[in-house]
Image (cartoon, rainbow over all chains, first blue to last red; front, side, top):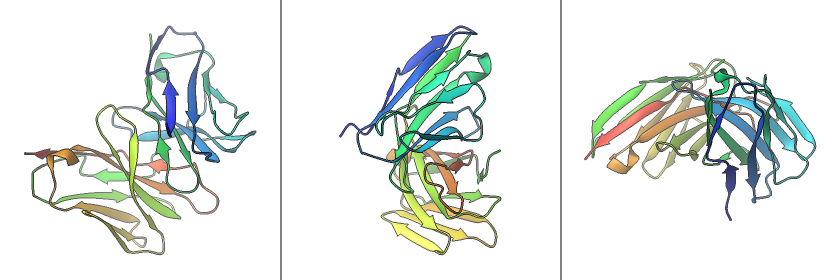
Length: 110
Length: 113
């Protein structure tokens, strides 16, 4: 099993550009989540999903959209990138309590 | 806002010593988990303790939970250089909270050979 995969590993955007961070899992997990990690801040929940077709907001959802059309995929869309969205983004999946994390996407917005 | 506060923010010890990290949280929880993050990598689950448990062991790890004080501690015994990493506590609220964890700010552990 590949576990949780994320692409790209690194991305540089200009302010105002849009992009999609990809996340896929092959463990047939119902639950998937997106977090952002900023220096000294730990991880903060952006959006999460409890199954295909069902998503909800986390702690810091503004500026991000998600959708979940399949169990495997949970893409995160940045609508109009801002420098404040410079961060490392982690996707995670779980069947119950224990979450499995992807390797992260390091995003810089200039 | 962050649920957990971790203490200390950084810890530097010699190989063979024990490392203790503490986590405090604000609201009621269903369970508390500890994760490890090596530099530049994703997080890896270490151990979970439920709100009705007081202590749990896994290999060289010991976790305690005091719900009256809203605090937890992670003890790593006989530490190794390979234990060098950041350690995060994460809490899950009551009810159906799968997929929703609230993380502390982490403790950076450095173990010197």
